[in-house]
Amino acid sequence: MQMTTYRSLAPIALSAPALAELGSVNGTEHQLMKRDAQILWGSYYGPQPSEIKGSKLNNDWFLCAAASISHINPYAIKKHFKATSPSAQRKRKEKDSEKFESIELELFNIEENAFQITSVKYDEISDKNSISGDAWWAGAYEIGAPRVGGNEYIIKEGFKKDSKDSKGGFKKDGKADIGLRTITGLEGVTSDAPKLEEDLWSILIKGKKSPICVEKDHQWFGFTGIEGGSKDDNVNVTLYDTRKGEYTRVELKDLAKDISHYSKLKNDDKL
Image 1 (spheres, one colour):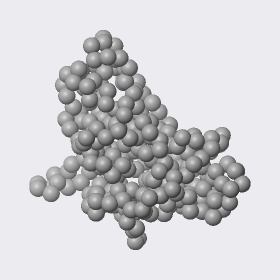
Image 2 (cartoon, rainbow, N blue to C red):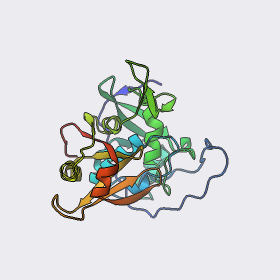
Image 3 (cartoon, rainbow, N blue to C red):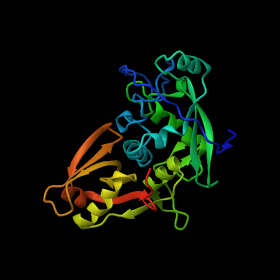
């Protein structure tokens, strides 16, 4: 597929329609939903972490970035979407319920060092994709990212959980800094987690304004909040689990024991 180099996309402004519940989908893993156009997200402000749910693509290292970014500033994701469906445009003029059949989406190609644009149709969403209710922006990311590619973990065939190491042929797991950069275009870093609670607190507190993902028990989670000071006895951390599609709360002292890595934007860029 031919890619277009970055150009500014006019973001989609949505009202807040009620979300219809998505019925259960039976059949094969690759069954297409084959439904009418639907909303991209359910809030006027844009995507929310709670709209990321149930992906079967082993890409928590990618979706955790979308969760943390959408929690901090939905517009940081919203601005990369543009409606292309004529019927959707007519509905917008009629101030209807803002349903879209297709969109243009821009993602950052790391190898080319540039944003590129690809098109995604709603009827391409299948039961393997992340979708919650009728909101399909996360599923659109999952379809669009492999078309743009640009790194060893997101290729035209889809997402890869691990890749061959260029030096010794060993497998290495995908890290969330790739997801952060693919979505924002900003350089990310992945580091070993600190051993001390106070050091971990100092890292996570920056996640209120700049996205962070943490890896524990071989899964990546989007950081969405912390309650308590660095010297407090009971500090609670809120993470978003993209596999289960739910928020989870853990005490900082327990997270410090279980966390193996964390990913963030290199310069703690505010979104």
